[in-house]
Image (cartoon, rainbow, N blue to C red):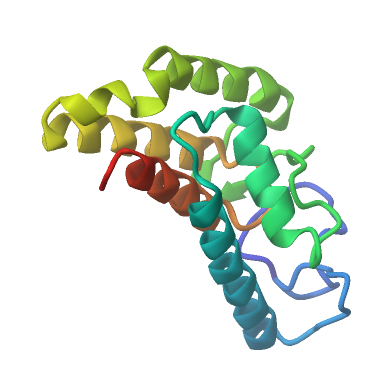
Length: 163
């Protein structure tokens, strides 16, 4: 059974926690290895393409998920349309995801995508980055790979800020 709970979904292969994928893989370890390799390749590309004016907005975040995992998953870069929970934690209700994501990224933009924090103390930068990272994890916008893509997103913000 899946590590996530939601009403009804065909995102996983029946009776497993393995997401249906374009390669037809039903081995969890192999799938995880492929996801890891895709993420590593994405890191290399994204770091090499960073510009001083890179906008770390909602479109960038969605695109990061899509471009990293679209070769593997049909739903890459698409917000989930079902309510989900993990253990005792309920993630943001699917119907509220678009508005909550817009709110979060509006606030991040108001803070100049944390670029202004670069001139402040490292502690302040780390606190703001951690705040936004926790908010994104709590929203859990995608069916899978939220933690990994969120870490990559904020790693890129840190790199863009000279860390």
